[in-house]
Image (cartoon, rainbow, N blue to C red; front, side, top):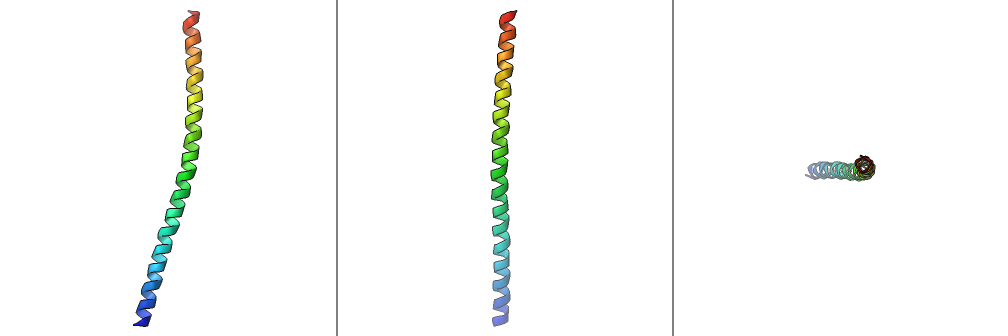
Length: 62
């Protein structure tokens, strides 16, 4: 009976380790993606602001 218990505990620990590692990887990927997305959104806002200023200038010059 001790051998079966050892095998079950080992399998349980291995499964827990796999789940923990996958959760850690997912968290790191989400953090990196959020940072990149934030930078993209800031760049897009800056482009929109420049486009708006250019269009307003063209409208006033007509």
